[in-house]
Image (cartoon, rainbow, N blue to C red; front, top):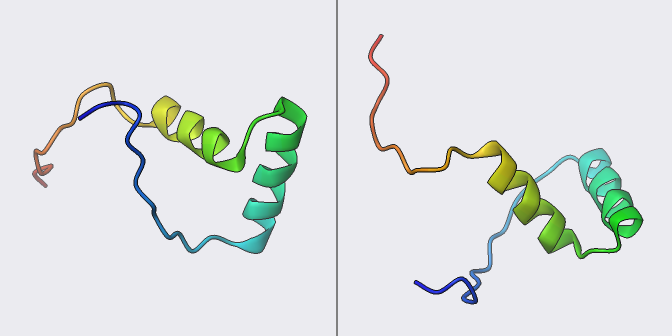
Length: 55
């Protein structure tokens, strides 16, 4: 899969989070999409792990 392919996703977020994210995107002079993408990349592990944690 190439990096240029984008998929649409619908998210249900608290209005205050959306407002904060939009404001930050303006401060950083980037799109809201790019801001969310950057946040997810920073949060997610480098590799996909499909292992269920045992209790």
